[in-house]
Image (cartoon, rainbow, N blue to C red; front, top):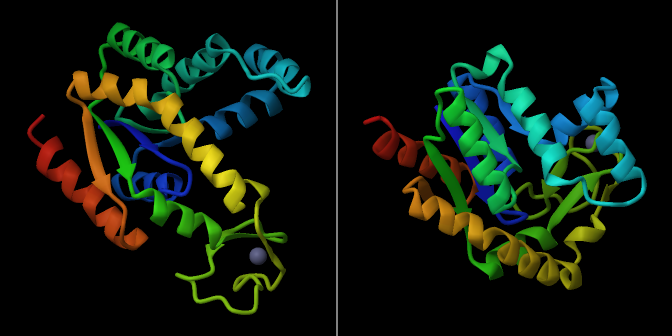
Length: 218
Ligand SMILES: [Zn+2]
């Protein structure tokens, strides 16, 4: 099964896609991991990406697409993959589709994790990251009242990105960037919307249900 996960920041996309990867035994591929692997491995694309990043510029599409193609050509992706954080633009989505067609594959489903703006703002406002082990928590759902990491005991910190005044701007940017992508996957009949209003566990159950009901016939 070849899958893509989409979802606004705070929608639980990373957590859900990693968990699904463990359960169905196909690799979870995040753009962050691909970038880090290429940069630390000193590949040609990695060196190129590093030049842009070090100048504070966005890495151009063709560099990112090149890295994703290389990753999807590795043997562990032959039985399927879960993409998290890619594609981000229509251009990337089209490049991905033509690459997969060349290699006799296709995207089966695009899971879009949706939730209302108020829930999203609420969720991000309670998100904290441990300064020690870097795990992230939701103060509400993890019942944390002392602001300390339940795993290592270090202090928890709010990411600048999650501050209310920044969240609104992030959401506007996210929707602006993602709308053409959503439209594309609606047109190609691949999009499955999964509700994430409730707990993370319910979101995950919704994802499994969506894939079973709509994905098994293929
Ligand atoms: Zn910790």
